[in-house]
Every structure is written in structure tokens, then in C-alpha cells.
Image (cartoon, rainbow, N blue to C red):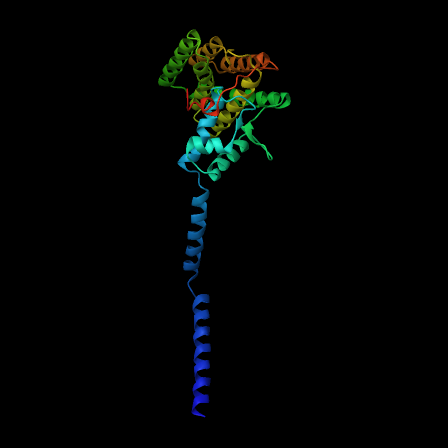
Length: 272
């Protein structure tokens, strides 16, 4: 009899303990539950946050396109990128997806990534968007330019002139793109500047696909005329010169180009 009573008491005690534990979980302060969930979410976000390696790979490919080392159709094999940058495939795939989102890379199912090849229709749309954006940016630059900014622009033109007369095509291509981005920076609007950076990179793909080898992507004299207008605070003149300059660039585009074969390391500027 005494043994049965002890068993019943033990079961009752166990039930009360389990119930108390459940109540303790349910009554835990909401702030602690939220903090715990936030901590877990923060950890997940940290895993997805771009690393220094992401930035390094992205910038190497982006610069390769901007400087016309990476031409449209160039293959970007994941194993080779992993080896070149000393990272795993997850990092490389994340960067390639970002580049694809920005229109710089095309991801082909079961074939891997390549530098994007804009179609003639996309070429027209990209130049149309760029003309509209650069009209706004150059007008804002005229209103906001400083004497120091003008000195920097003149130095930029001098560097372009030197590269052109040295027949240094890679430097000339980089400086030509940089000229437009420098004017965008004078507008003091980072959002518009970011949009132009994407459009300039996509225009570099077009130039790499259609322009003849050794042909300058921009004309130095056209850049100088734009700077003259900015210095005179002539917004209408600067807009007209910029529009004519971009139309001239689009009209010079040809429909074919012979491409030399180079290693991926050379195209990324990692090896001579």
C-alpha cells in the first residue's frame, strides 16, 4: 500500500515539474525571445554579407571589362577563378551571380559563366539610357564644379593625351571611361553616379565586342570640348557636346571584331 502511494506521488511530482518547465518557456520575456531570434538572423546575414574576397574578385572582373582586357564571350571557369583567388566555389558563385545581376556576366546553364555579349538591340537601349543620364549629370556638374575639380579634369585630359600619344590602348581605355565617371562624381549624387558606373561598364562590353582593335573608345578632343563648356559654366553647351560625343561613339561601333586568345589570369591583369 505504502509503495503504491509513493509511486502515485512520484508521478504527480514529475507532472508538476514538466508543467512548470513548459510554463517557464511560455512565460520567458518576449524581449529575450526576440533577442535570440535577432541573434540567429544576424548570424545568417553575416554569412551572406560580401567578404573582402568577394570585393576583390568582383573588382578584378569589373576592371577587366572596363579596361577591355575581358572581352564579351570570355569564359570565366569556376575552378580557375577559385585557384587564382584562393577561394571556394561558394564565394566565386556568389560573385558571378552579382555580376550577372549587374549585366556584366551571363550565366549559362550547364556551361558556366562568360562575359556578357550585348545584342544590337541592347546596344541601342544602353546608349539611349546613357545619353539621358549623362545629360543630367553634366548639367549638375556645371552647377556644382569647383576650381579644384576643374584642375583635376585638366589633369585627366593631360593623362589621356599622354596615353594616346604613347599608343597605350589599355591606359587610354581606362582613362576614357574614367573621364565620364569623374564628371558624374562632380554632380555630387552617388545614386546617379552608381547608375552611370553600371552603364559605362556595359558600354565597355559593347566597345570590346564591336570596335576595331586599337581604336580609341572616345575622342580626346571631344572630352576637351566638354571640359571647356563646364569651365565656362555653359550647361547647354556641355549637354550638347556630351550628347554629340556619345552619339558619335555609338555610330563608330562596328558589328565584328577579331579577338586574340589569352589566359584568364592575363585578362584579369593578374599575370603578364
